[in-house]
Length: 298
Image 1: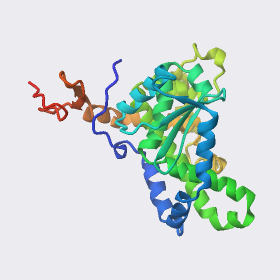
Image 2: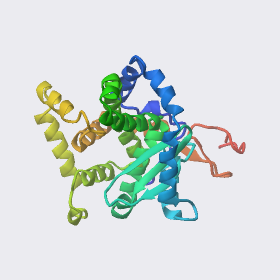
Image 3: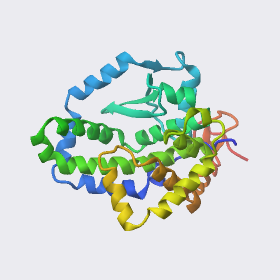
């Protein structure tokens, strides 16, 4: 299936309502603006970036052209204008993360994700991380990780900052639902997205080629049907209070719901572009004149 490059796509078109609501509450917390300003100007965060860049493999058009092209294609598909720096880090699990300091954003792909995933599934994982960049999540994610470490080492800091830590943690989990949507928009293959999530959920490698992602989708739907009442929802929320991500089953379920609602397809249709035959740039499908070279469409 040919992927559509999505023209003029803004992140608010697909952001999950849980994400929006949690971030709005977080920003209203007393002292949050002060903490953000302090964090932006705290020099030690820069040290982590320098160490990351000095100890991992830098993916560029010349050092690793195929992987760079895959990331660039995902970014172009979801209309992300500024490509982050790309690094691979040795860890044989299916995962990735984004980090950064001010305007310097970095995408880190674990070696296991690159080695074990076919391109369509890897594109989902890459698109998920680029979704964090597009939505401006990176700063708050780095803050959340920092505050967790700070409060673990200081009882006083823990007591003073607990509301902000809890708010950041809850929003962080909700932001993953938005990033999952970005991942699906990047790969435009629900089966590939569910297969990637299924592998992250713990599918043994020996069954990668035979496991059916539709069975995993059924598992997600059955779980939410069985454990979706008020009491079990409270149990779920308490169980993941210290986690950075929602459970994989919940992520799969939310993605399936989004597709079944028709909203995913609406975004594909509304932001579909066409290629200018002269300059080869992608433009709005309804454009009569190419904004790049002036070509007049017939």
